[in-house]
Image 1 (cartoon, one colour):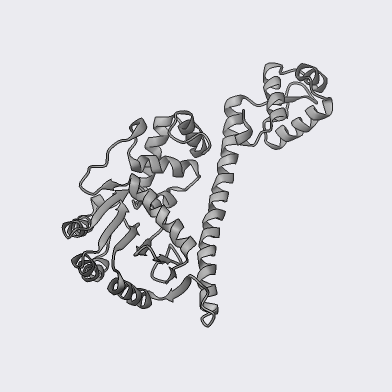
Image 2 (cartoon, one colour):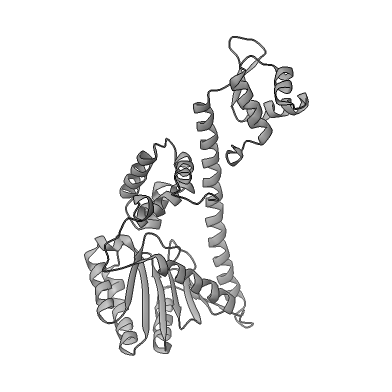
Length: 331
């Protein structure tokens, strides 16, 4: 069935019939398929729009089906473009939603929209972090989706982390797997672990996030410029969802001391994440940002995976990955 590639059942049946009966006209196709001629004509119009049939060069006035290898490549390229556009719209909608929450909080300071507070600028964000740190009593959960931590970021965070851990506060932090290639970052992570903090790494992380005492969350308003502003969330529904997101990521992340291992299908967590991103239509640059690696490394990972799958396009890679069980069937 090719419905996932944008071809309905009747059009697929007509296309298959044309491949097996290249000289059949509408009447013959109708008889062979047991479908009304009008339904066959509608299917031919659809196939023509998809460039799966074209006028015959040898038999004037007759349509012929393009070969399956060309036809499937056309359908997969078209579907990949649709998925890319859909993912871009989803990313834009997600950013707009967070931005809307923050803007509404700023516009209604007197009514104090429940559960949301906006912080504008790096200084206000850092001041709030200090305030949250001093008020923390039990637990801090965080996502740190940086491939490398800057010396300034490490220097700014160490006094706060040392104070928290010194007071017996539990700290769980998830970094990207790529930090294992950064000596300053790995040294900082080991420093945290040495003071009692728990550190794991994951192939990709959805967002930068900090959750304090299961009651307050801090997330950036703009994921591409985290210093521009942040939203402080305290609504019970939002916190429940964010805690669940953290626990899901934590459960599959690997302890820092462990060497990233290959899982099912001989794929590392990073490769498995790249397969999913390829199937969703992400570009090399977008994959690089999600995995915390360079665009060159992202291209190498993508090309290696496509070679393993014998795929000529990214959407075809997604199809083949699903067929091999690398992705769930409903993906």
